[in-house]
Length: 216
Ligand SMILES: [Zn+2]
Image (cartoon, rainbow, N blue to C red; front, side):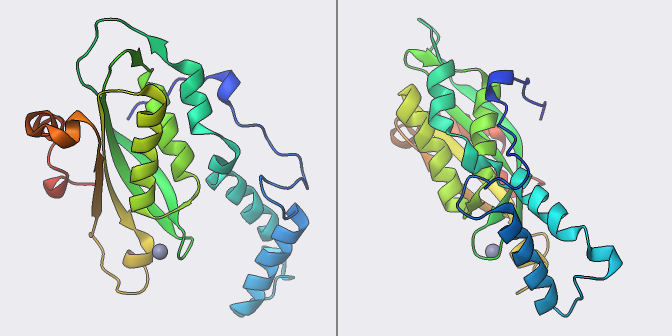
């Protein structure tokens, strides 16, 4: 996918060094927790190669979980436009995302396809991708991610319908546990006309291609 245009007003604020990142724990506590995990797996957190690791992990977490600092509904409310007349389906497909499962904090890598049928409000397509990213950058299960994307668009834009299909592979399945590589999970949420009208749903599924037979 093409990168969404940068929008300075939407750049997440950079937490200050040592400042709590959205939550109640301090940076020092987060780094101590990483050291504890390293000790638990049998490492020595004081060996030279690991001295900077707790700090790097904390910074990586700030980036990977920056979605807690942003309100997707606020972003949609700020940016929609009233447009008369355009009532065709708007589809953004193959929005790549990286998320983390809330069961193992391991990556969920996938793509989302998002469509809506405008009634009187439209939104820049880059904002649809931003909504996906904000929810993806939280601890997730794929079903919840799918519903949150669809219901947020539905609630703020009040379109005639929203369709979201998410296909993803879960590293907690591919790198541990049952060790099944090449498995992807497909979830969907349809509202309004996408749910009630088979031909609208079919048009959307044709545009995105059948996720069950596509490569990731
Ligand atoms: Zn998991």
